[in-house]
Length: 282
Ligand code: MN
View 1: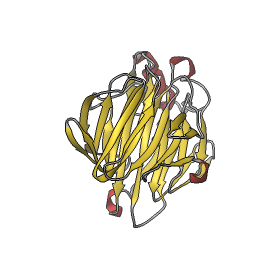
View 2: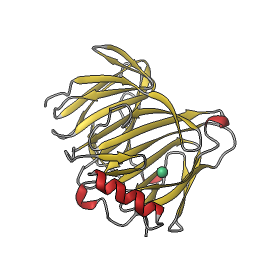
View 3: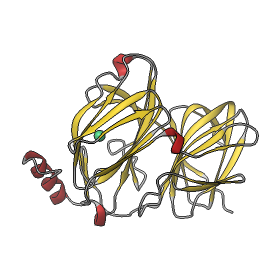
View 4: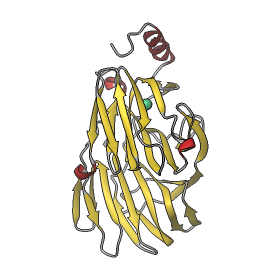
């Protein structure tokens, strides 16, 4: 077993998206911090409705998948196909935009805590133009391993051996074999997890802190990991909660313009023309 070492520690950047939702961008194009196959990671957490109430009114996507995980709160999704989904605490929406989708993502609460993540997962060139598809995954469909010594691992995607549990997530993803997990550790607790060699991997701390050789890494930071067959983490004095992202890199060229992620500039121009002509999602 070769343990992955830390290659970078990155603070997330405060930004706004949608109609003025305040969030922290942990990975993204503008920051130059994509982690192939992950294009973006946004974390939102606020109990001030002014930070989230405007939501994400109708907007398009093409060429990748969005995975939305609601930790606390309530959001509603609607798309141009007439699909509607209720995203409640602990639930996930896995949306494959494929050739195109136009949708809105709006908070369904006027106060209280709204906390969660949106992950943008790239699609290989061969499947970018597949028909749009989405799936709502309620909290009860997400397997949880209770750890000896406290804490838990909730597995959103992929498969994972956790102590004596063999977790199989509700979504297996495609070519990139993503592993996405919400992991909570008690103060000082350590956990080793196997992650396939060749996968890129990171953890994003969103409560407490991690204890690392480089010192404590607090909430709002990503820890990017080098290659190896396993990762090892230890919680700091207040415990820690992290989102684990791992996936097989595509190593394909990326052309991105806002909500369109393709392989060439010509394909981006086609997406813009299709959107303008009302056939993006046709
Ligand atoms: Mn969207």
